Length: 159
Image (tube, rainbow, N blue to C red; front, side, top):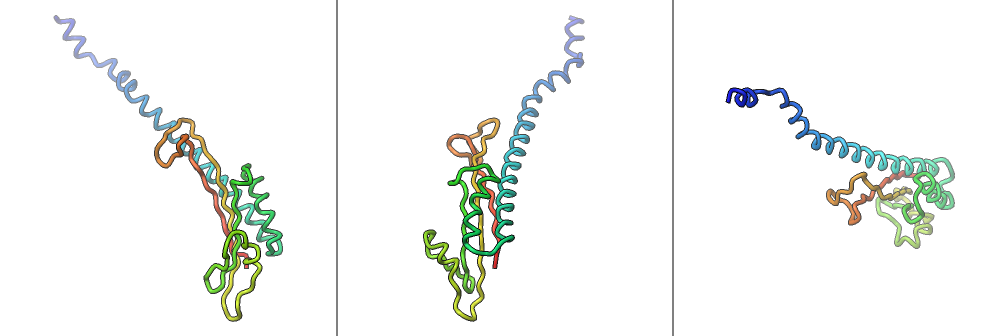
């Protein structure tokens, strides 16, 4: 009986048991932080690729011929396919966009505003890429297959 009382008061193995209980929770937090960090890094790379591509628009003549190469620049910088990159350019007269449809974007961009109306020309690049986390979690905005769609976007007024 004395021996049984002595064992019940012994606290030497308590810290090991507590650690064994907490280790899975801590490991989950660490893996989650690494996954979030990887996703954020991938998003930053997309934004940097869009910004580098948009810098090309700032370095040349502001014509639609220059902007046609922006899609190729963005595809190469982000290592994505052509359908993952969207390049928009438009003219605004008095704060109102003059683009009537995507098919007439180039013609609308080259138009001129009526006299005495403030005008501005803009370029915008949007890059999409799929991100697969280490551990699939079909929550918090995930796609049906457990991936996340990351978007990097940059725009600039060129005139």
